[in-house]
Image (tube, rainbow, N blue to C red; front, side, top):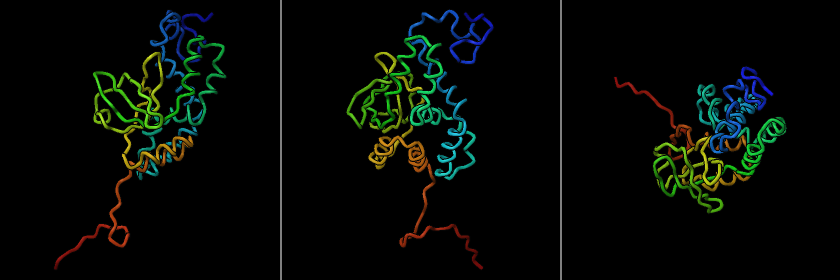
Length: 225
């Protein structure tokens, strides 16, 4: 019943004419990214403190607190709040009466998808084939840019979401070192957001140089007279 210039009743925050007007019958594949953006918007509105806290844990472990303002905007942080912090359910509880049935079903399906570790098996223009190291399942992920992380043999942490027969990497991926695979699988199995941020932050922390006794080495300036 919304008029063109009124807020769309779906809860996106946009005007009806630029949101759902004329899109009611578009395939769910065309609306999946828009649905995900609505869920992220909800998380950012309802879980601002959680986002700030997770970004703080990540940047503190990295040893780069100055990056906090940048990290609070990272897609990964919002997705962790949605899934590991369980704000997906809150989104559905508040939007159930305004979402089309197929979007409700898709959001419910996404709630069952956990973050895990993948190995890149093969690539093609615009897509990559991944093997879930936890289950051995093979999936195809589209909308992926060609970069070093998407080369065969690379290890990635992510939560690609199913849309029909393919998967979409809405929240992106983070590269993982081979020596951290078991630790990552354990952390992801526990679904502890802070532990996950600590693990990811440790991969980007500047290396510490220690002497043979295990003491941290410090730069020293020597002047010859």
